[in-house]
Image (cartoon, rainbow over all chains, first blue to last red; front, top):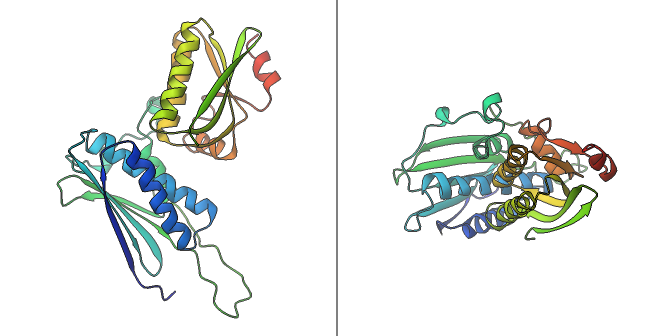
Length: 161
Length: 114
């Protein structure tokens, strides 16, 4: 790989526009890092869902609170952090949107989508006291000189339930 | 691309042609407003044509569910038509594909109301 670690972070306002802004920013990073169209879609959607979660559930749509987004490119993966200024939450207490009684719920699918679309996903207590979503996608395998161009797509088994 | 919605009468039913993204904010709000407005006008047999909807997030999924349950609650029916691959895959993933009545051609969707 040999890629130098890269770090990018931005503080976003608690407003709907921040969702698109965060998605667009991370999509540019993902494209530059070599992710294909399908992985970019999954990364973009996950960032969108993470920021929606911070906007709506974490910061309760209160404009005085901020959303902190950070992206790290390491040698083998893209790691995304979304931190809110809310009260935090426990991942195991989030209702399963696939449960029969929740299927017709009009909300509560964001965490599920992030888990399905990313290779790693967790929620930890953040330095603000809010929740910090940490999710990662493995970088696609880089072609090496003389490698006849095989195996350019990274495996992306999704994690957990 | 922001969501656009136009609707046309098809016998007793109404087909809503949607194009763009159904996402948090204006997209979801426009879908809600369009469906509520039709129901208020007693147009309770609704087909949502999603052929040109290439992106939908959890808020958009929630809005589709809301449109479906609200229509049903007011004695109507709401069907989905022409899902793009991304929307199809999302509905499969969230187990909603079997909840909604989904069609691949408009004639079948309209006949299903009879």
